[in-house]
Length: 446
Image (cartoon, rainbow, N blue to C red):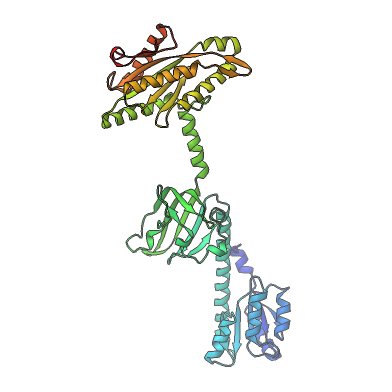
């Protein structure tokens, strides 16, 4: 955690001096303690590495030339062995380019030449300690925020100005199938493969801001699909936003969520809203939406449309004698028989109770619609076996024709209902055609 102002005032950094020259160590101790630092000493690299295993140190001042392990080797070992290594300041009497490169390649943050100039050393130490402390606080803060982001349910990823991934949280890793090590450093298009609704190619650019003229705003991908590492895909909502600093693109953030369950739930809700819970047939709500569409299509195509309104005969005695549970099973069997008798382009709907409607779009002529009505009556005249009971029902059917009986969907349905009641009055187990077409069209089963 970052230090409070009071802690910062009382804090005494610990500096480890590593030099085989005892005089240098004494001089450094006197100087550093005079500046308010705590000092630890080691006469060689091995002793320094051993001490660092047990004592927390804020800075290592290390001589480059020592017996056994020289300073560059010790510096490299510090970087490898210590989980959070302290900064290392190298002391050297040489100023060769190769020597300087060796110092920095080993992990040192800076070097200072011998003989030491105390004002230079003082300011060099203060700068290094301040920079290191700021770096650690920033890293701790970053880790804190990353921990928070890792608890988020949404997938979150960060990009640099070149479009490379610099962060990907746990939720994103789980959804995509990539580990952080696999994803970080990759171009975002290698990881975020997006397909818009209706497309089968996963090549949408979800972060177009790298193009100069798209530096502001954000992009939304609703109801898209995202490809996982293993090639499978899932439904996703995605938002991508650029990070603009001083008028220039410095990176971006991608936030997304798996919407598979939400879409599945939405499909279930839509199905429940448009289907009968008992028979799983389309219900009245579905018919009231579908019928105007069918009328509009028939009008554009210049053809007829037939509506068959069915009411079961002798169904009430079954409910009264055997109970609604048996009656429900009979209705389920009726739904199956009607569905099996129809073509895929036709719709069999249960309006409620023992009323059903067939939206007949496959028939071309009135004669064809009448043949369907006869077939339905014959199917429903066959006995129905339910719980060791044999049930006998029938059907009264009213037929309405678009556009002959009406060009309005609601009126057409009402006319079919009226025709069904006429069939009931005529003795049941028959069909009746709304209007006067019956006399001149086809023989009746009445």
